[in-house]
Image (cartoon, rainbow, N blue to C red; front, side, top):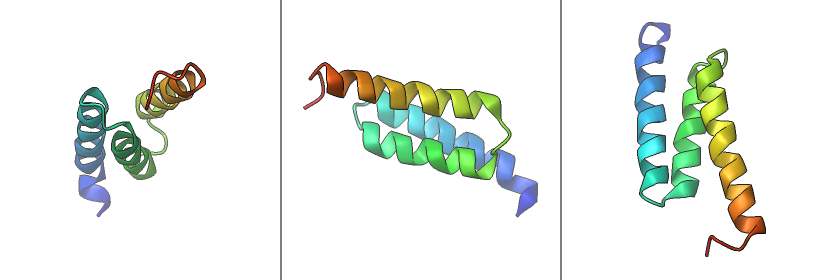
Length: 66
């Protein structure tokens, strides 16, 4: 399973970012969390997840998300 974890993580990350761009933020965050779980030492994945989570927090605080 370790052999393809990088490929699987990349797939989850791409799917997560695509879902976020389509406005499906919660589903996108779930995919990004799955990617980080597969590759916990990948700083870019962690930063992408943090960026989306911060965007959600900012949007909720500003009442932009409904």
